[in-house]
Length: 90
Image 1 (tube, one colour):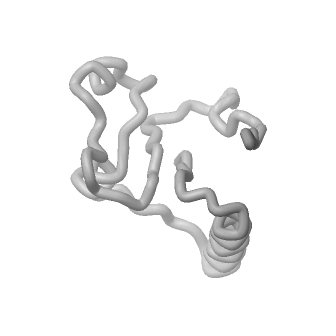
Image 2: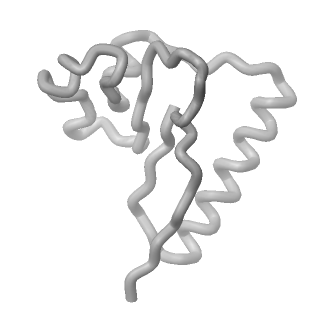
């Protein structure tokens, strides 16, 4: 069986993006390569880069609650489908 999940590109925006992260919740090999870093504002960083850059998500309590609720819902769906691989694009 092959399943596809199609989502909108959240980076398709007219807003200036200063940094992007692809978060998987792992630290093993989770840093952007030297070639990726050379892309400047187009670079996509990873989990350990986010820690090293001391980047934090700032949101109010209502948005935080909604965000965590969505993450839990997504995790339950993925567990039900027995899918382990995921990414959170920030």
